[in-house]
Structures are given as C-alpha cells and as structure tokens.
Length: 225
Ligand code: ATP
Image (cartoon, rainbow, N blue to C red):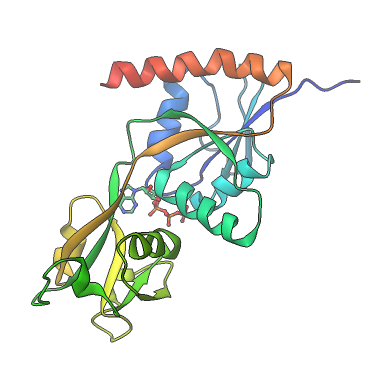
C-alpha cells in the first residue's frame, strides 16, 4: 500500500503566534481538530499535517527539511539562521510569504536615568537577551563591543538584579518595558510572522498541495489589509 504524500507545516503550539496562525489556516479552509493535543495534527480535507512545536524549533525543522513549511516570526528565523551559519549547520530556507500578524520589534532598552547619547553610549556594556546573534550583528555593524548574557525569559528584570546593564528584547506596545523602569533606546530589528519553505525542492505532489494552499493564504492576507 502506498501512502499519499502529505505536506507538513510547523506552527507554534502555544504562544503569541499560535492563535493567529490557527485562524489563518482555518480561513484557508483547512479543517483541523483544534482540540487535538497531539504533536502532529491531521488536516482532514487536504493532505496536510500540522506539526505543533515551540516557535524556536520551527526554523531548524524547515532548514533540515523535517517540515516542508513553517510559520514563524522573522526574529526567530533570522536568529536561528545566524546561529546555524556560525555553527556550520544548514541554514537555507525560502521566505515564501510575509504574513500580516506577529508584528513587533527587537530593541535595546536601558534603565530610566541612563544617559543615552547615541549608540556609542552602549560600548562596553552587558545586555540580557534571547537574541545574541542579532544583537552581535548590530554591535559589529555599529563598531561597538558589547557583552551579553543569554536569558530565555523575564529578560526585563536583568538590569534590576544586577545581571546586565541593559536588555535587548522584543517590544510591541512598550508597556512591559515601562512597567520595569526601562526606556527603549535603539530598535535593531523589525519583525512580523512569515511563511517559510524548505530550500530542498518539494516532490511534485507536495508542490501541488502548496500551489493550492498559497493563493488561499495570500487571499486571506489581502482581505485583512
Ligand atoms: P516559544 O516559547 O514557542 O519557543 P517564544 O518564547 O518566542 O517562543 P512567544 O512569546 O509566544 O514565544 O513569542 C512568539 C513570537 O511572537 C515572537 O518570536 C515574535 O515573533 C512574536 N511577538 C509579537 N509581539 C511580541 C511581543 N510583544 N513580545 C514577544 N514576542 C512577540
């Protein structure tokens, strides 16, 4: 018995992108069981499987060809690509479509009262961040030397507890920064969610499924504009 090839799409299991991603797939007419707690959810009306994982795992799964497509923030994508490039690992992918949700910016923020006179004021300081590669690229491009400590969450408390001089973190409204006595001084990366595709060419069957899905995604995005 031969099994029909199924297009595998990685999406965030739970978090800031998961509701919008699920809504997009639904609007594209994909029927999937939202209460499905399994890692791999079957779409019942098209040969598509949805792999629900952590956002930070999505770029690697697509770059390694484990998933054909992924929906992920550009921040996570770029950070992973830079990290993998540095490690000599596969980091190629195709950015198939920009999506109009998940908007945010990666910014440097300093404690209120810090005398910020421009990028040079950050030279020699230490930053808490989840995005060391993007921060390092910014520092190199601007000719400053910085140190960092890697934190996966609660980045904004780092200056208060003496772990870092400032932070480099994702911001959307700025309310979290304000609540933690921090002031945004430099935006270093603008991000939105993107649909990405493996750089390895798809089988004709999978390409056909993508050719059905992509115009639907683009139609939903256009209707939202
Ligand atoms: P995961 O836990 O799934 O590995 P995560 O910790 O990045 O990922 P979330 O905090 O849910 O999870 O963020 C997912 C993505 O949502 C971010 O990578 C970013 O692209 C987007 N995003 C939009 N606005 C914000 C914001 N204000 N703060 C953080 N992320 C945001």
